[in-house]
Image (cartoon, rainbow, N blue to C red; front, side, top):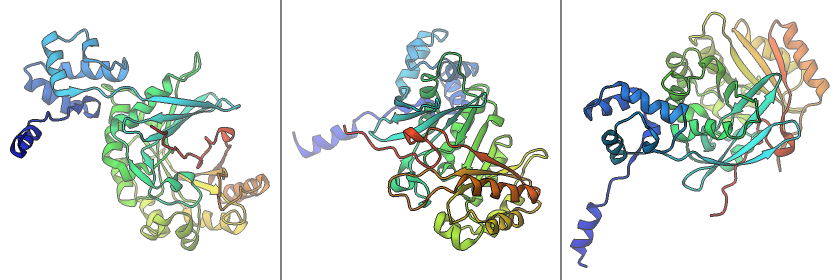
Length: 359
C-alpha cells in the first residue's frame, strides 16, 4: 500500500465516541432536541444512567428504537468500574477501583455512628506533595473524569452490606479536588441534581489543601456543599514544609480568603488538622490556632496521623490530642477528634496509595 493510501486510511479512522456519562443535563438536552426528540428525553436517559445504573442504550426501554440507535451512533456508555475490596475489622472497606487505562484509585466506605461515609478520590495520585500523606508518594498520574469520580459511588454501592446505605460523601481520598475543578464540578452536578443521583449537597464535603482562587468558585456554584480546608500548621515555616502549596497561598492569604467565603449563616468552614508528634501538637500550636481562626465561623477536626511505610512522622499521643482539643475549646472553637478507621487495611486518612496492577 502506498504512503498516500496509508494517510487516506488514517484520515478515515472513526472518531472516538464521547462518553455520555460525561454530559450534564443541558448538554444532553441540546443533542436530544437537535435529533428531533423532545427535551424531556434527556432526563429519561440520565435516569437510566444514574439511578438505574444501566450500561447499554438498548436497556432504555422507554426510548424509541430509532432514538436508541441514534444515541449509539454518537455516544458510548463507560462501563461501571470494577473494584477489589479489602475489609477492616471495624467494617471499613477500601476499594481499589480499576480504571480503563490501567490506572487505579482508592475509595473508602466508612461506617460509624449511624452514618456510612464514602471517601472519594478526584485524581489518580496527587501533585500537592504534602509530607504526611501517602498519596503524595505517587505523584500525579492524571485527573479523573466526571464519570470516573461519580462511578466510585456505583462501585461502592455494590459493596454495601444488606440494609446499609451511603449517607455522606467526602472528597478526602486521592488527589486535590480543586486542582481538577472542571471535572469535579461536573461530578458534583451529576451527584446532586434531581436528574442525576439526587444526593443532597449538604451531605457532600469537598476538602482542599488551600487552592484559594477556586474555593470561592466552588461555593458560588455549589452553595450548599461543605468545604473543608487542610490546615495542619499554625506558622508559614512549618506549613511550607507540611503542605508546600502554602508557599503560593500562605496562611494569611488562606485565612483571609476563608473569612470572605460566601458561607451561609448557619454554616462553617471545617479545618482539618493532622496531629504529628513533636511537630504541630504543642499547647503553643493550639493557642496560635485559636488566634489564627479568631472570629471566623469554623470548626476544627483533629486527626490522628496514620503512619505509612517510610513516613517521617509519628502520631501524637492521645493525651496530647485531647489537651490540644481542650485549649481550642477554651478559646471558643468547636473542635472534634476524628478517630482513625480502617488502619489495618491502610484505609485511614492519609494512607491511600493505589498501585497500578500489572496488566
